[in-house]
Image 1 (tube, rainbow, N blue to C red):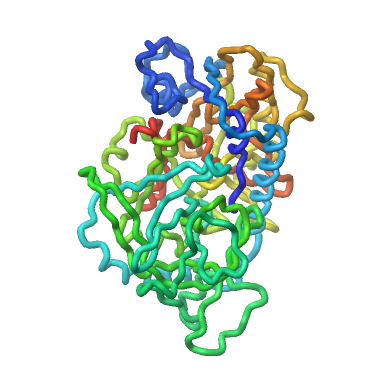
Image 2 (tube, rainbow, N blue to C red; image 1 turned 90 degrees about the vertical axis):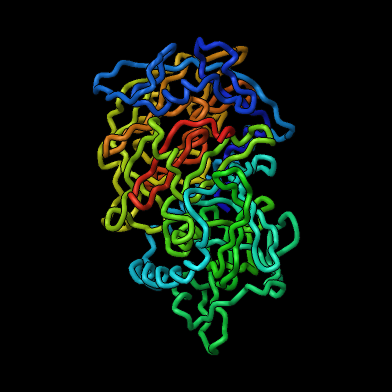
Length: 525
């Protein structure tokens, strides 16, 4: 599935970077070791790059002639109990990331032959109106917990849910880069290994197949070759493929999904939603790391979020902890409008692109204007940030919870890489030795000086990141590398992965068509 993801490489030996400030050590939180103090995160989203001993936490305009700025980071080692050689892991996992980009590119460039986006939305809207009856006492926002996939060797996050009647517990991978939610079903003719028994639809009184004659069947892609619909009760077959070549095939159906939420008053309560469209997978292959399936939170009409907006509201958010945080900490997924989050003075917003501005209705597209490295606005051609409508449509910038690393296309990646190389005064290691670049020897160092990194959006929003979100260390070799890769040459995608998003509260506000981001100690949410 979705990128086996480079952060597994951290599970060999992982280093957590901490922003160096002169704040007293009593501000250090034991359950979130990635930062020294709250101010360092506040500065991460300020348009002014991080400075030592800076007091301001507001948002200022950054001038075109901003001088070089850097952040001093303290290196702190945290070994993990895995014996794989880090260079080999890096090579294997980076390769999976690149395959993912290729599949995303193919998904966008292929023309949809089954049904138009407008028809899909019309079908979905008519169906989701039937879910209003489950809304009952919902108001405000409700929160579910997410678990890191680091312990099973992946950079993804998992949510636990209950499916069917009586409810069966399943672990699903959280994915904002795809729409269809699905689980492995018994009988399973070709399946990957999962934790726990398979879900059997015959044992659930709330399961209902969707007929191949039902208009809802047009919302999913069919297997190839397509089997003709011969009888009225014939099930609707589906086929869904992911970025790394993983795929699922089975029956498109309806079922009751129940999420164990924490409500604003702190009480836990299971919230059911009946007749949710999902895939009951009988042929599934790929790297899903023990999960039962996947929860799709994309923009398309069959995604879990799109189907249940009438129940949970028109927004959701998540706050992702460091993948290798203490196992007692958890990331959070919030459905509904969080007024406290919206009123947070550190919350910044940038608009989503929509309609004719984007080539695909699944992804959450953003419009970048420029990149800052070390306080300097990089000279990047403006056309690098726009998707190409001529010929095979491609490109644009998407934010994705299922990708770990961040990718930039040529020539953007080369310009960013060169800027880091110019600003880092450390011994650089030959690129042949590591799959990432640039990489630096930090043997014996307790702290290193690294340039700031930030994204400026077309609408004026600025997103600056703490260095632990864009650098990592091969501890065995005492080497740090830039956790950014170049997109495949035939693709113009820019992808903001979940490593760059960690310890920010990320809001998907579809009512106002915007992305919000605010620095946060996610372990404390």
